Image 1 (cartoon, one colour):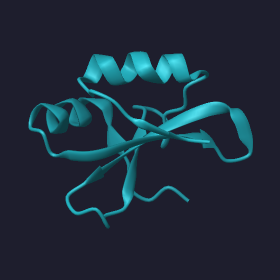
Image 2: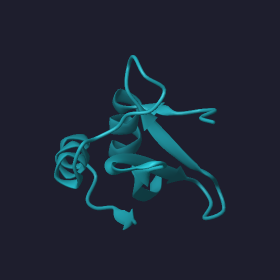
Image 3: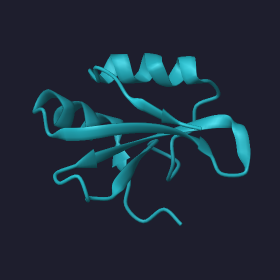
Length: 83
C-alpha cells in the first residue's frame, strides 16, 4: 500500500534545499523489470517516501538508466540501488 508519496516538482525543491537525506532505487515488487525511486527526509530512521507521477500513485521506470536520467534532471547527485 502506498500511503504518502512525493511528486517530482516537490522533489526538485527538496533537492535544491538540501533536505534529502537518502535516495534509494528498487525493483517494483512482483516485476523485476520495473524500477521505483524513494527518498528519506530528516532522521536516518524516517521512512522512505516514494516518488509519484501526476496521474499514478507510484512513478515507475522501465530501466535503471531512465531512473538515472530522472535523478540527474531533478538535481540528485546519486542514489543507492536495492536489488
